[in-house]
Length: 316
Ligand code: AKB
Image 1 (cartoon, rainbow, N blue to C red):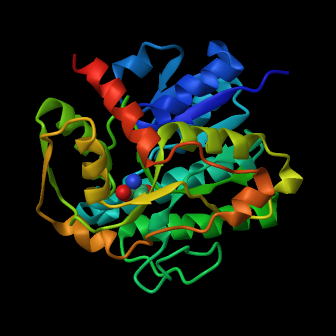
Image 2 (image 1 turned 90 degrees about the vertical axis):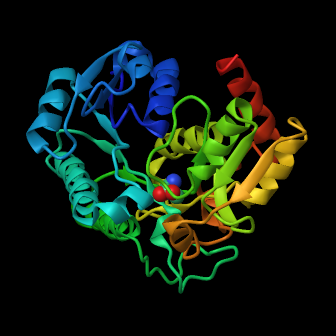
């Protein structure tokens, strides 16, 4: 029987591209996109779409039963920067949505779950370079706390109830189709847009702030790879470290200047600098490499070329 997939949070930066990719693999009729509103018309008009409130168990169940869903990708979340403005809202959304989906799997309405964690699970006491899979985790943002607690619950549901939940710790994700919203790593997307539209960018992180990042195509490939991996190959049921590139705002600016000679960058760090300062500079993802053959395809050079080419066409 064909697998039926529901993506919750399909209008967002990663959810939208996951929708397109999963439809190309499983067929349009087998992938249902959903979100709390119609905020991304490209996704809404691209195939089957349902309004689903991730915080309402009944709303998700209704959709699961209507479409005979087997697998849920839970992509709805409040990210690090917005979460600091609305701590209780971030806690409620990030935790209740995860519990609803895990409980649907526990009750056997669905058989498989993907839930993204983040490098935000790490905090100021974590080793900053080549951060290992198992290490100190004392996150200092609400978002990071929800992701760390979420990881513990994923492992608990796997151990106690046999729920097949799979997860990875996304770094900052860079893409050109849909803008991210409310994250600390968002500068690395905005900078390419502003380079094309304004020829300049004011960075909210300082020039030497190095963070782990990844191009969208790699993030989507990783997500699909972990979901297709045989269950017995997965040794981690909390969340896998995942890595591709690490760079600073200055590194991107230098790369952009190779294409746009007079591109100017200025630096005005704001509250997001305090968040970035608690996160790792680089990640050791050797467990993901061993367990499910993870390896990224994009470095900063290749990604910058692709971003500027695609955005150049978009704004032409
Ligand atoms: C954020 O900046 O909050 C996210 C993340 C690293 O999870 N992009």
